[in-house]
Length: 116
View 1 (cartoon, one colour):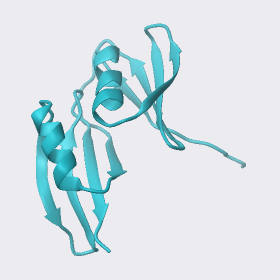
View 2 (cartoon, one colour):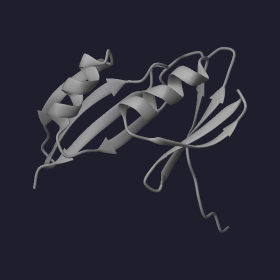
View 3 (spheres, helix red, strand yellow):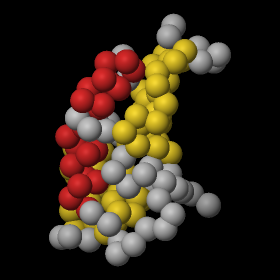
View 4 (cartoon, helix red, strand yellow):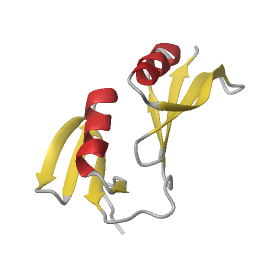
């Protein structure tokens, strides 16, 4: 086998809301759109696809890890914008500071900061 690329596809009942969260709140850019059915967004070389779905049950099947320079500042900004924080920032035994927030469809996003 010779797989070359991979990216997760999140199913969402509100395509525009999901894309706006990743673009407006997390700094991704929209890279591809197929009408109101599918949108791909990217951050550097990483891409996520969003597929429109009529229903999602249960929500929150995916976790995404994003590194940043200041977990506390990012959590504060996301909280101020109305994002649910599911785990407050804390230093972890493996040498990183992390927190978790939840996207509009219930998927957890882990925010990590390398401490050294």
